[in-house]
Length: 114
Length: 115
Image (cartoon, rainbow over all chains, first blue to last red; front, side):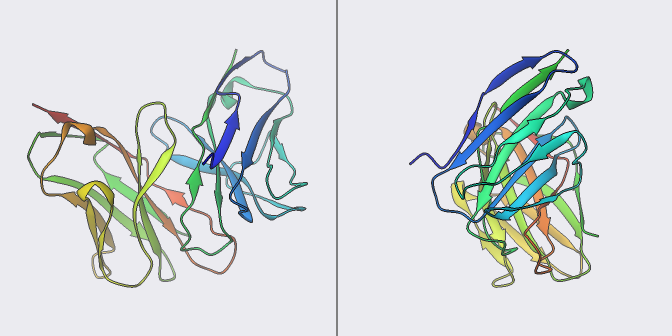
């Protein structure tokens, strides 16, 4: 049972480069989201999607882009990487938008921007 | 706006001792509350959640939490700590406003368990 799968697990980027963090879930979940985790700040929501073709901004969306062409995939794009985007990124999913649903997390992607 | 405050970024207990991790929330509507655990270099795993049913919620690995509306608290407890409980714990709130579920996380509490 794969759950939420993120790739790559580790990545080093140079300032100004672009890249895509991949996320896939095999649970047929409608709701998917991306968080970043920084020391002493917990997790903060970047973008989320309530279904294929529908995305919206979270708390810290600047510098990131998302799309949701299928139910399974929700890639996160860094348009022009900056050192401030050095972080651990988590993709997550839940069955639907219900606020009481359990959210399932991937194992994280460690990104360093130099 | 909803928010979560976790008191104590680091907590150290002896093996076999009581674990108490504190969480206070702020929400303008009845909240849904969660505790997640994160082991080193891993993602977050749900420990337990409160969704307006019983105020005492039992979770995995012997943890439980009690929702106290009057104190706006949702503290996590375990009667007897085990070495395997060493991890970071996050409290989170979802406002249940009917829009897409968006968790607001606390800053986390790192639990250390000593012999």
